[in-house]
Length: 192
Image (cartoon, rainbow, N blue to C red; front, side, top):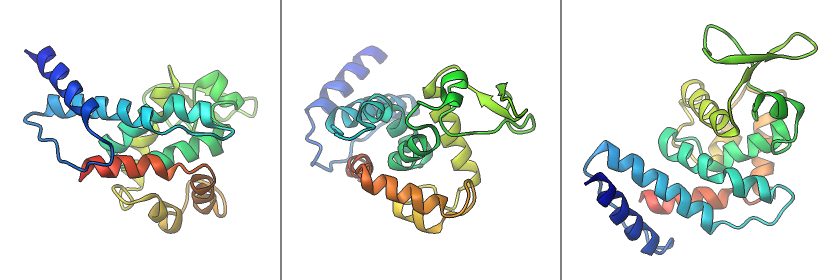
């Protein structure tokens, strides 16, 4: 029965126009998760980036959208931070530890594995880039809960910490430069 519901949801969602802001009713938590998975795939297919980080954004936008739907952290914020922190997955830390966001390891708050860099800094180590996105979204959800559910401009203007100096202003510039806000608009159209 569950497979039939998934197939029906998939057909309905695929047939929806992204400009249509209809609500889709869901009767159970399991169906909501399935809906979010399907919605993330649809949004990923609708935004076709054309910039230096297009391949990275196209590949990882689905997990960023899912984190947006599940944790309230805008897709644009996560993609911009991954671009800023790891060059879109090109940094050494991303290559050896699948750590896209420069997340340090503290045994009190992270129960996973770690990587020790040459300067003896411990960094969180993940099995995949997708796991890095999920942990990062959970981190932001916990430590930036005042910004959860707000748009990317709020994050850029009102958040402090995390990086040095004008870190969040820089994240806002990356979002504007690569038009990452387009993902957020599509998510918001479906959430209405």
